[in-house]
Image 1 (cartoon, rainbow, N blue to C red):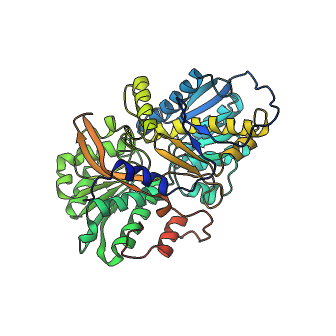
Image 2 (image 1 turned 30 degrees about the horizontal axis):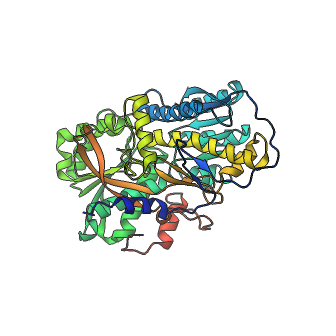
Image 3 (image 1 turned 30 degrees about the vertical axis):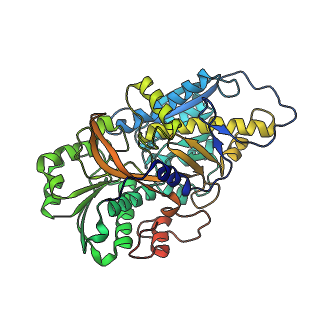
Length: 468
């Protein structure tokens, strides 16, 4: 097993995979401070009316364990900004709507823009909903920050040249690739002559993508002849409550590892039922995402020594609080406000609001008046901000224009007595530049998986070697 990195290694890893454009840092009590050009000689007065934010996420049902932290992260950021006087003196008001099916989510989004007259939007979790809403954001010309909904298809095919939408989470392919690399490193799979793999993923964009990219990573790094797939299944998202038929089949096929991108209520139901069957004693569980949302609730009694995936994004203990005060203060403020620790969607929504603030302030300095939406967009593109998870870079060009990137993280599951639930330990930090298609790459999307990342791995990775 890999040794635990030092704090210096961790921060170095976070920075190593990013290309820095304009940089936002932190000073005093501010979360972001944008470095800008010299101020305009004369500035027009800033309007005094409040800014209005729209927030949308799962608040009920199987996805609420992701949606509730999303709304809480955004609200915390808004409250902090308002306590410090707002954005250039303008306070932020907000309206919260529920995310559900793509059709209903689009209707609610339209209502936020047309009826509530929001200035900017933060939200969405599902990989089915961001492709549905993104074209509407372009139509209505509304600045939109997707917290999640990480499908590669969003900016590769649905809206290949976005203007008004940005996505905070790491791209979906990076999630699957990071989980597979974490398993290879932390479970010492390079030392095994053959690895038997089982898969269970939700039957929609996210699950199919996770399956494709974990599998291609295993085959490329370990060698295709050393990987044997012994089982695959794709239960409907939030449509299965009894996973026992899947569990018994998985056990019967005797895999070495079980790879899963089940999330929300599905991963909770699965692992709790799997404990009763002794599944975790027979194989290693490789999760892309189980520790990504609300670990105090979602993985309270998750077994030790399995791969703890966090959507290749953020876990509240990292970067180390002692060496990275921004993460410490975020955790303290979030816990004080909500009585629990932040997770990946909470951090993403929190960052989105502060990115909006930093971009508005940067644009104001450049244009000398309250900026138009195009001014804010220009201030965002190609910029790197520093949030609780470390640096996050906003891509300015194709492919995946307006996708945000930060270094990935994966680790080992361990019950931590300090917190009373399973945490991610022994973190492996993966430079995002090593596991995602670089800006300007002109390959063709692979028809099998439908993503550029799949083609990029096939064409550029050397078989039998880790990419870093």
